[in-house]
Amino acid sequence: MKCRVCRESAVIDIRRHNANFCVEHFLRLCRDQVAKAIDRHEMLSPGDRVLVAISGGKDSLALWDILIDLGYEADGLYLGLGIGDYSTSSEGFARRFAEERGLRLEVVDLQEDYGFNVPEGARAARRVPCSACGLSKRHLFDEAARRGGYDAV
Image 1 (cartoon, rainbow, N blue to C red):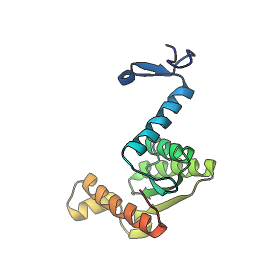
Image 2 (cartoon, one colour):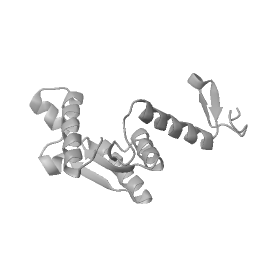
Image 3 (cartoon, rainbow, N blue to C red):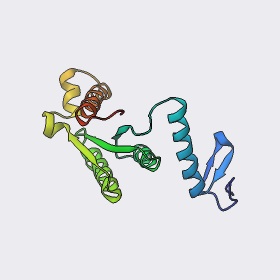
Image 4 (cartoon, helix red, strand yellow):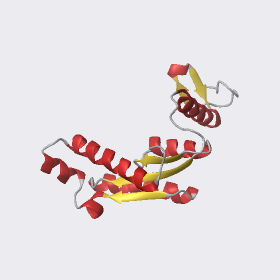
């Protein structure tokens, strides 16, 4: 399997593009697609301050990295949802990522800062956890963006 661009050994096959890419050209493709989507959908303007909602997973961390690479002033916001080991490990990934790159990361811990976590909130509201989580996250993202003077989340 060879890279469509440079003919070096490919590491990924992207079927919707009917193409294989090496690491360098796959990362370039991702960056270019994000830039194109931002432009096409008028999501951000040059100079916008962006608050990136970080889960600690590869998708949100990759987006944060790409936004920085594209020249945006982008800070991260991690919400500790109180979901056992998942929340502990994902917060660790988010913190390490920010520290390694010298980026600003705000951490909001639902239990410490608001006195509840998602499992407890779901029980109290008599909702499924995803519903309680979604409501909490949207409110906290908006609140953090207003407080920090961000142009976009």
